[in-house]
View (tube, rainbow, N blue to C red):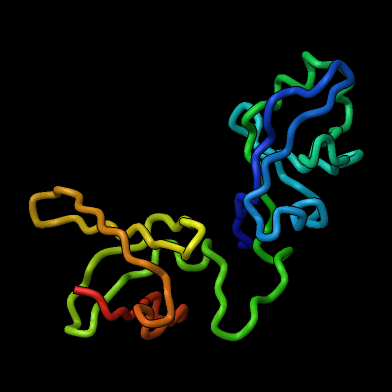
Amino acid sequence: MDKLIIVGRLGRAHGVRGWLHLNSYTTPKENLQHLRPWQIEKDGRWQVIEPEAILQHCQKPIVKLPHCDDRDAAACFTNCPIAILRSQLPKPDINEYYWSDLEGLTVINRNNIKLGKIINLFSTGANDVMTVEEIDELGKKQQRLIPYIKHVIDEVNLQEKVIRVDWD
């Protein structure tokens, strides 16, 4: 089964004609406009929606959804996540990975010590960072932040679901 990847979120209503602000999680941000169709989660259900239009307003994107003709209708979609099927994403280059493919992988250091699983990735602007969570024998969670940079990452093996790192 093809998994859904969150690629953005609908923001607050814009104006009185049913437009919404659009928050893209893609890099570059404009890529979200070309990934179609969208699936939007509203009231706990995913629904396929094809945006009617996307415009730039004050250098920020706004979107018009079908049957969303006034501010009240648009407000119902505020903060709804936007997803696409994983198969809609272009194939990454060699040694490049989508964050969604790395989440859940086990992180092991050069001493063959399991550091935990990747639960999240984020960008600092300078580089990307993995949030790695380990659960000890008592069930206590411990998180560590490990930079996702060339001299730290030794190997990514998606088949074995493992990332090997140079980290203590």
